[in-house]
Length: 89
Image (cartoon, rainbow, N blue to C red; front, side, top):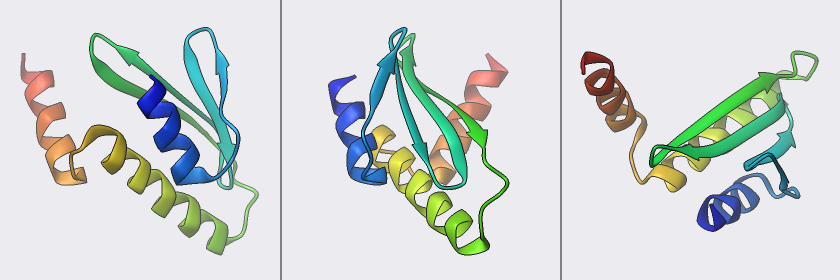
């Protein structure tokens, strides 16, 4: 979790708080990002903030993708492939 916290801070450049074993961040088009580790897998829940300009949505999306890439070590394509395999089990 320490590494995930560091990646969150680097990706969003905002303070990270902890609640009930989850790391919490709020940034731009995402009112809330909750990250935790469950069964050795990164779980991320997001709550959108729809009242932001398009530029902020694009910036948030770019930062969120970078966070997932750096936190997991997998590209978006690789994450989709792994998720499909997990669903098939």
